[in-house]
Length: 359
Image (cartoon, rainbow, N blue to C red; front, side, top):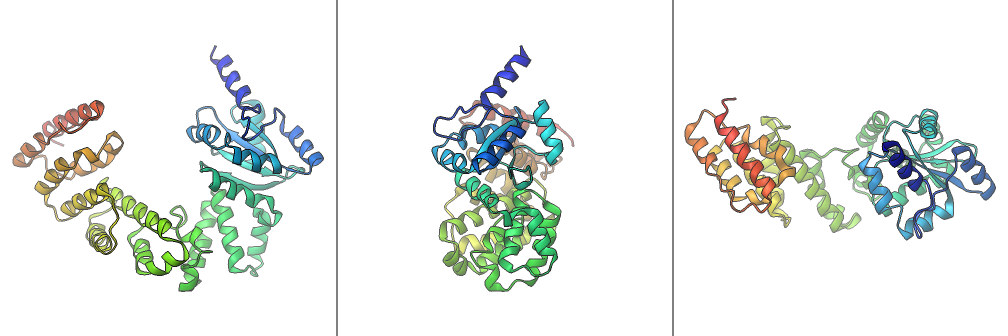
Protein backbone atom coordinates (compact mmCIF):
# COMPACT_ATOMS: atom_id res chain seq x y z
CA UNK A 1 0.00 0.00 0.00
CA UNK A 2 2.79 2.43 0.93
CA UNK A 3 4.52 1.74 -2.40
CA UNK A 4 1.27 2.36 -4.32
CA UNK A 5 0.77 5.69 -2.54
CA UNK A 6 4.34 6.79 -3.34
CA UNK A 7 3.95 5.75 -6.98
CA UNK A 8 0.66 7.66 -7.18
CA UNK A 9 2.31 10.82 -5.79
CA UNK A 10 5.27 10.48 -8.16
CA UNK A 11 3.03 9.94 -11.19
CA UNK A 12 0.87 12.88 -10.17
CA UNK A 13 3.85 15.19 -9.77
CA UNK A 14 5.47 13.99 -12.98
CA UNK A 15 2.47 14.88 -15.14
CA UNK A 16 1.23 18.28 -16.37
CA UNK A 17 -1.18 18.85 -13.45
CA UNK A 18 -1.15 22.66 -13.57
CA UNK A 19 -3.67 24.03 -16.09
CA UNK A 20 -2.04 27.47 -16.05
CA UNK A 21 1.30 26.67 -14.44
CA UNK A 22 4.40 24.76 -15.48
CA UNK A 23 3.68 21.87 -17.82
CA UNK A 24 5.90 18.99 -16.69
CA UNK A 25 6.46 16.23 -19.23
CA UNK A 26 6.21 12.54 -18.34
CA UNK A 27 9.56 11.83 -19.94
CA UNK A 28 12.96 10.41 -19.09
CA UNK A 29 15.89 12.79 -18.98
CA UNK A 30 17.18 11.51 -22.32
CA UNK A 31 13.76 12.06 -23.91
CA UNK A 32 13.58 15.56 -22.44
CA UNK A 33 17.01 16.41 -23.86
CA UNK A 34 15.96 15.11 -27.29
CA UNK A 35 12.77 17.18 -27.19
CA UNK A 36 14.74 20.25 -26.16
CA UNK A 37 16.95 19.86 -29.20
CA UNK A 38 13.96 19.49 -31.48
CA UNK A 39 12.10 22.46 -29.98
CA UNK A 40 15.21 24.64 -29.60
CA UNK A 41 14.72 24.92 -25.84
CA UNK A 42 16.61 24.11 -22.67
CA UNK A 43 15.61 21.51 -20.08
CA UNK A 44 14.39 22.49 -16.62
CA UNK A 45 14.75 19.68 -14.08
CA UNK A 46 13.05 19.67 -10.68
CA UNK A 47 14.99 17.32 -8.40
CA UNK A 48 12.66 16.59 -5.48
CA UNK A 49 11.86 14.06 -2.77
CA UNK A 50 8.42 13.23 -1.40
CA UNK A 51 9.47 14.21 2.17
CA UNK A 52 11.06 17.58 1.29
CA UNK A 53 8.88 20.41 2.66
CA UNK A 54 10.46 23.14 0.44
CA UNK A 55 9.87 20.89 -2.59
CA UNK A 56 6.18 20.61 -1.72
CA UNK A 57 5.96 24.37 -1.19
CA UNK A 58 7.44 25.05 -4.63
CA UNK A 59 5.09 22.56 -6.28
CA UNK A 60 1.97 23.96 -4.62
CA UNK A 61 2.75 27.68 -4.52
CA UNK A 62 5.17 28.46 -7.36
CA UNK A 63 4.91 25.91 -10.17
CA UNK A 64 1.11 26.16 -10.25
CA UNK A 65 1.10 29.91 -10.98
CA UNK A 66 0.25 31.26 -14.43
CA UNK A 67 3.36 33.49 -14.41
CA UNK A 68 5.48 30.39 -13.86
CA UNK A 69 3.80 28.61 -16.76
CA UNK A 70 4.25 31.59 -19.06
CA UNK A 71 8.00 31.70 -18.38
CA UNK A 72 8.97 28.03 -18.06
CA UNK A 73 6.78 26.60 -20.82
CA UNK A 74 8.19 29.17 -23.26
CA UNK A 75 11.86 28.46 -22.57
CA UNK A 76 12.08 24.88 -21.30
CA UNK A 77 11.13 21.26 -21.60
CA UNK A 78 10.12 20.74 -17.97
CA UNK A 79 10.61 17.46 -16.12
CA UNK A 80 10.64 16.45 -12.47
CA UNK A 81 12.19 13.40 -10.80
CA UNK A 82 11.88 11.83 -7.39
CA UNK A 83 15.53 11.53 -6.39
CA UNK A 84 14.84 8.34 -4.44
CA UNK A 85 13.51 6.51 -7.50
CA UNK A 86 15.71 4.84 -10.13
CA UNK A 87 15.68 7.61 -12.75
CA UNK A 88 16.22 10.25 -10.08
CA UNK A 89 19.12 8.37 -8.51
CA UNK A 90 20.84 8.10 -11.89
CA UNK A 91 20.33 11.81 -12.48
CA UNK A 92 21.58 12.63 -8.98
CA UNK A 93 24.79 10.67 -9.57
CA UNK A 94 25.31 12.23 -13.01
CA UNK A 95 24.91 15.82 -11.78
CA UNK A 96 26.05 15.42 -8.15
CA UNK A 97 22.68 16.44 -6.69
CA UNK A 98 22.80 16.14 -2.89
CA UNK A 99 20.39 18.87 -1.69
CA UNK A 100 16.66 19.21 -2.22
CA UNK A 101 15.10 20.89 -3.94
CA UNK A 102 17.73 21.32 -6.64
CA UNK A 103 16.78 22.84 -9.99
CA UNK A 104 18.93 22.24 -13.05
CA UNK A 105 18.99 24.09 -16.35
CA UNK A 106 20.47 21.79 -18.98
CA UNK A 107 21.46 22.33 -22.60
CA UNK A 108 20.11 19.78 -25.13
CA UNK A 109 23.49 18.00 -25.07
CA UNK A 110 23.08 17.42 -21.31
CA UNK A 111 25.61 20.05 -20.22
CA UNK A 112 24.60 21.79 -17.01
CA UNK A 113 23.88 25.42 -17.79
CA UNK A 114 22.77 26.62 -14.34
CA UNK A 115 21.78 25.36 -10.89
CA UNK A 116 19.50 26.80 -8.21
CA UNK A 117 19.06 25.21 -4.80
CA UNK A 118 16.35 25.96 -2.26
CA UNK A 119 12.89 27.44 -1.89
CA UNK A 120 12.00 30.83 -3.40
CA UNK A 121 8.98 32.95 -4.11
CA UNK A 122 7.88 33.12 -7.74
CA UNK A 123 9.61 36.29 -8.97
CA UNK A 124 12.84 35.47 -7.13
CA UNK A 125 12.82 32.00 -8.64
CA UNK A 126 12.19 33.19 -12.20
CA UNK A 127 14.95 35.77 -11.80
CA UNK A 128 17.44 33.10 -10.74
CA UNK A 129 16.49 30.51 -13.32
CA UNK A 130 16.50 33.13 -16.10
CA UNK A 131 20.24 33.61 -15.58
CA UNK A 132 20.66 30.12 -16.96
CA UNK A 133 19.21 31.20 -20.30
CA UNK A 134 22.49 32.93 -21.10
CA UNK A 135 25.41 30.54 -21.69
CA UNK A 136 27.90 33.13 -20.41
CA UNK A 137 26.44 32.66 -16.90
CA UNK A 138 27.39 28.98 -16.64
CA UNK A 139 29.80 28.29 -13.79
CA UNK A 140 32.53 26.82 -16.08
CA UNK A 141 32.50 30.01 -18.19
CA UNK A 142 32.50 32.24 -15.11
CA UNK A 143 35.25 30.23 -13.41
CA UNK A 144 37.48 30.46 -16.49
CA UNK A 145 36.81 34.18 -16.82
CA UNK A 146 37.62 34.79 -13.15
CA UNK A 147 40.82 32.75 -13.37
CA UNK A 148 41.97 34.89 -16.29
CA UNK A 149 42.17 37.92 -14.00
CA UNK A 150 40.32 40.09 -16.52
CA UNK A 151 36.86 39.93 -15.00
CA UNK A 152 35.03 43.22 -14.53
CA UNK A 153 33.40 44.03 -11.20
CA UNK A 154 29.97 43.51 -12.77
CA UNK A 155 30.94 40.05 -13.99
CA UNK A 156 32.41 39.16 -10.60
CA UNK A 157 29.02 39.96 -9.12
CA UNK A 158 27.41 37.66 -11.73
CA UNK A 159 29.87 34.95 -10.67
CA UNK A 160 29.13 35.37 -6.97
CA UNK A 161 25.37 35.29 -7.58
CA UNK A 162 25.76 32.07 -9.58
CA UNK A 163 27.85 30.53 -6.79
CA UNK A 164 25.18 31.54 -4.28
CA UNK A 165 22.36 30.09 -6.39
CA UNK A 166 24.26 26.80 -6.58
CA UNK A 167 25.21 26.93 -2.86
CA UNK A 168 28.91 26.70 -3.66
CA UNK A 169 29.79 28.23 -0.30
CA UNK A 170 33.60 27.87 0.05
CA UNK A 171 34.54 29.68 -3.19
CA UNK A 172 31.64 32.07 -2.65
CA UNK A 173 32.95 33.27 0.72
CA UNK A 174 36.56 33.45 -0.44
CA UNK A 175 35.81 35.54 -3.54
CA UNK A 176 33.28 37.74 -1.73
CA UNK A 177 35.83 38.56 0.98
CA UNK A 178 38.40 39.39 -1.69
CA UNK A 179 35.95 41.69 -3.45
CA UNK A 180 34.89 43.39 -0.22
CA UNK A 181 38.47 44.21 0.69
CA UNK A 182 39.03 45.96 -2.64
CA UNK A 183 35.61 47.58 -3.13
CA UNK A 184 35.14 51.32 -2.81
CA UNK A 185 32.38 52.84 -0.68
CA UNK A 186 30.46 53.77 -3.82
CA UNK A 187 30.62 50.15 -4.99
CA UNK A 188 29.57 48.73 -1.62
CA UNK A 189 26.52 50.99 -1.51
CA UNK A 190 25.55 50.49 -5.16
CA UNK A 191 22.46 48.71 -6.45
CA UNK A 192 24.67 46.22 -8.33
CA UNK A 193 26.48 45.21 -5.12
CA UNK A 194 23.34 44.88 -2.97
CA UNK A 195 22.54 41.25 -3.95
CA UNK A 196 25.80 40.43 -2.17
CA UNK A 197 25.82 43.03 0.63
CA UNK A 198 22.19 42.41 1.54
CA UNK A 199 22.27 38.62 1.33
CA UNK A 200 22.86 37.13 4.81
CA UNK A 201 24.00 33.84 3.29
CA UNK A 202 26.89 35.69 1.66
CA UNK A 203 27.31 38.55 4.12
CA UNK A 204 26.03 37.19 7.46
CA UNK A 205 24.13 39.44 9.83
CA UNK A 206 26.48 41.02 12.36
CA UNK A 207 26.65 44.16 14.46
CA UNK A 208 29.36 45.46 12.13
CA UNK A 209 27.30 44.86 8.98
CA UNK A 210 24.15 46.39 10.49
CA UNK A 211 26.18 49.42 11.57
CA UNK A 212 27.61 49.82 8.05
CA UNK A 213 24.13 49.89 6.50
CA UNK A 214 22.87 52.25 9.19
CA UNK A 215 25.86 54.59 8.88
CA UNK A 216 25.14 54.93 5.15
CA UNK A 217 21.39 54.75 5.48
CA UNK A 218 20.48 57.67 3.23
CA UNK A 219 22.68 56.36 0.42
CA UNK A 220 21.20 52.88 0.69
CA UNK A 221 17.68 54.30 0.83
CA UNK A 222 18.33 56.23 -2.38
CA UNK A 223 19.88 53.31 -4.26
CA UNK A 224 17.98 50.31 -2.85
CA UNK A 225 14.73 51.75 -1.51
CA UNK A 226 13.17 52.32 1.90
CA UNK A 227 11.17 49.10 2.10
CA UNK A 228 14.05 46.75 1.32
CA UNK A 229 16.48 48.53 3.65
CA UNK A 230 13.93 48.55 6.49
CA UNK A 231 13.36 44.82 5.93
CA UNK A 232 17.10 44.17 5.93
CA UNK A 233 17.66 46.05 9.20
CA UNK A 234 14.67 44.44 10.86
CA UNK A 235 15.87 40.96 9.85
CA UNK A 236 19.41 41.78 11.00
CA UNK A 237 18.24 43.06 14.39
CA UNK A 238 15.93 40.09 14.87
CA UNK A 239 18.63 37.60 13.90
CA UNK A 240 21.23 39.15 16.21
CA UNK A 241 18.86 39.39 19.16
CA UNK A 242 17.63 35.85 18.64
CA UNK A 243 21.21 34.56 18.49
CA UNK A 244 21.96 36.31 21.76
CA UNK A 245 18.78 35.17 23.50
CA UNK A 246 19.30 31.51 22.55
CA UNK A 247 22.82 31.90 23.93
CA UNK A 248 24.67 31.65 20.63
CA UNK A 249 26.38 34.97 21.25
CA UNK A 250 28.99 35.33 23.96
CA UNK A 251 28.73 37.77 26.84
CA UNK A 252 31.44 39.94 25.28
CA UNK A 253 29.13 40.63 22.33
CA UNK A 254 26.12 41.57 24.42
CA UNK A 255 27.05 45.10 25.43
CA UNK A 256 27.98 46.18 21.91
CA UNK A 257 24.91 44.47 20.46
CA UNK A 258 22.47 46.12 22.87
CA UNK A 259 24.10 49.56 22.67
CA UNK A 260 24.23 49.51 18.86
CA UNK A 261 20.69 48.30 18.32
CA UNK A 262 19.24 50.57 21.01
CA UNK A 263 20.85 53.59 19.33
CA UNK A 264 19.78 52.60 15.83
CA UNK A 265 16.20 51.86 16.82
CA UNK A 266 15.99 55.18 18.67
CA UNK A 267 17.20 57.03 15.58
CA UNK A 268 15.05 55.08 13.11
CA UNK A 269 12.20 53.30 14.93
CA UNK A 270 10.87 50.07 13.45
CA UNK A 271 7.21 49.40 14.39
CA UNK A 272 7.69 45.95 15.87
CA UNK A 273 6.81 45.48 19.55
CA UNK A 274 8.19 41.92 19.52
CA UNK A 275 11.58 43.23 18.42
CA UNK A 276 11.63 45.86 21.15
CA UNK A 277 10.64 43.19 23.68
CA UNK A 278 13.61 41.05 22.64
CA UNK A 279 15.90 44.06 22.93
CA UNK A 280 14.63 44.91 26.44
CA UNK A 281 15.17 41.34 27.63
CA UNK A 282 18.61 41.15 25.95
CA UNK A 283 19.63 44.38 27.67
CA UNK A 284 18.49 43.10 31.09
CA UNK A 285 20.38 39.84 30.53
CA UNK A 286 23.52 41.71 29.45
CA UNK A 287 23.37 43.75 32.67
CA UNK A 288 22.54 40.62 34.70
CA UNK A 289 19.31 42.22 35.93
CA UNK A 290 17.60 38.87 36.27
CA UNK A 291 14.60 40.11 38.29
CA UNK A 292 13.86 42.49 35.42
CA UNK A 293 14.28 39.64 32.90
CA UNK A 294 11.53 37.67 34.64
CA UNK A 295 9.26 40.72 34.85
CA UNK A 296 9.77 41.60 31.19
CA UNK A 297 9.17 38.02 30.09
CA UNK A 298 5.96 37.83 32.08
CA UNK A 299 4.72 41.16 30.72
CA UNK A 300 5.44 40.09 27.13
CA UNK A 301 4.67 36.38 27.25
CA UNK A 302 1.87 36.73 24.69
CA UNK A 303 4.49 37.84 22.15
CA UNK A 304 6.01 34.35 22.32
CA UNK A 305 4.74 31.04 20.98
CA UNK A 306 5.78 27.41 20.66
CA UNK A 307 8.18 28.25 17.83
CA UNK A 308 10.11 30.49 20.24
CA UNK A 309 10.89 27.76 22.76
CA UNK A 310 14.60 27.76 21.95
CA UNK A 311 14.65 31.48 22.77
CA UNK A 312 12.66 30.91 25.96
CA UNK A 313 15.03 28.20 27.14
CA UNK A 314 18.01 30.39 26.25
CA UNK A 315 16.60 33.16 28.47
CA UNK A 316 15.72 30.87 31.39
CA UNK A 317 19.01 29.01 31.31
CA UNK A 318 20.83 32.22 32.27
CA UNK A 319 18.84 32.46 35.51
CA UNK A 320 20.31 31.13 38.77
CA UNK A 321 18.10 28.28 39.90
CA UNK A 322 19.65 28.42 43.36
CA UNK A 323 18.28 31.95 43.85
CA UNK A 324 15.08 31.03 45.72
CA UNK A 325 13.61 34.54 45.58
CA UNK A 326 14.10 34.62 41.82
CA UNK A 327 12.56 31.17 41.39
CA UNK A 328 9.52 32.32 43.35
CA UNK A 329 9.04 35.08 40.77
CA UNK A 330 9.48 32.59 37.94
CA UNK A 331 6.80 30.37 39.51
CA UNK A 332 4.16 33.12 39.31
CA UNK A 333 4.84 34.27 35.74
CA UNK A 334 1.28 34.93 34.46
CA UNK A 335 0.13 32.46 31.83
CA UNK A 336 -3.56 33.45 31.64
CA UNK A 337 -3.04 35.71 28.63
CA UNK A 338 -1.77 32.83 26.44
CA UNK A 339 -4.55 31.84 24.04
CA UNK A 340 -2.84 28.78 22.56
CA UNK A 341 -3.64 25.90 24.96
CA UNK A 342 -0.68 23.83 23.74
CA UNK A 343 1.75 26.68 24.36
CA UNK A 344 0.17 27.43 27.75
CA UNK A 345 0.54 23.80 28.84
CA UNK A 346 4.12 23.66 27.54
CA UNK A 347 5.02 26.83 29.46
CA UNK A 348 3.40 25.58 32.67
CA UNK A 349 5.25 22.26 32.44
CA UNK A 350 8.52 23.95 31.57
CA UNK A 351 8.32 26.43 34.46
CA UNK A 352 7.50 23.62 36.90
CA UNK A 353 10.45 21.62 35.59
CA UNK A 354 12.76 24.64 35.65
CA UNK A 355 12.14 25.69 39.26
CA UNK A 356 12.31 22.10 40.55
CA UNK A 357 15.54 21.21 38.73
CA UNK A 358 18.92 21.91 40.27
CA UNK A 359 20.86 22.07 37.00
